[in-house]
Image (cartoon, rainbow, N blue to C red):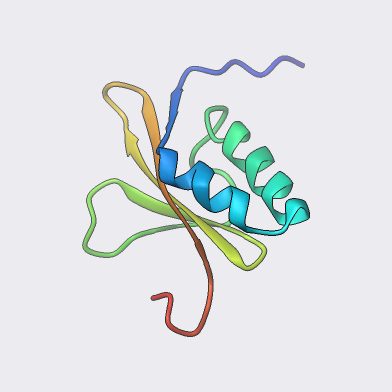
Length: 89
């Protein structure tokens, strides 16, 4: 079985900065999920963000990956990584 990647993935530099600050085990799990987004951005524990157009969030443990889907251009833009706390939302 082959997975075809039809989406382009763009990751904001702030996401990489945040990955350096979190525990390595969590950072590796988050990177795996980010790399899998182009295969199917609508798969997994995702939720559409209220009040935002084409903005989604995906849960990975206690962290959230925020990304936008530009369907016409087939681009996924990961713009924020945040740890879930009682004040996150």
